[in-house]
Image 1 (cartoon, helix red, strand yellow):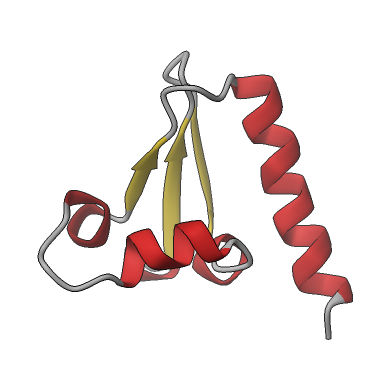
Image 2 (cartoon, rainbow, N blue to C red):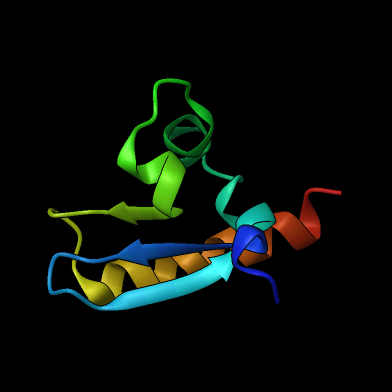
Length: 73
């Protein structure tokens, strides 16, 4: 998988989740972070850090993104 096709989500306890960009785009907030103009770090690096979200919760969020991507069509 190409780096441009993935997004790295980083939890408060520094656990990293690399997921498909399509799955991450399920979230309007993440979509805005990754596509906003202005050269923000999230846009350039393809990484989003969530300092308030633990790894356990972020893992469930990632699972939801894939579930929503599969069943929203």
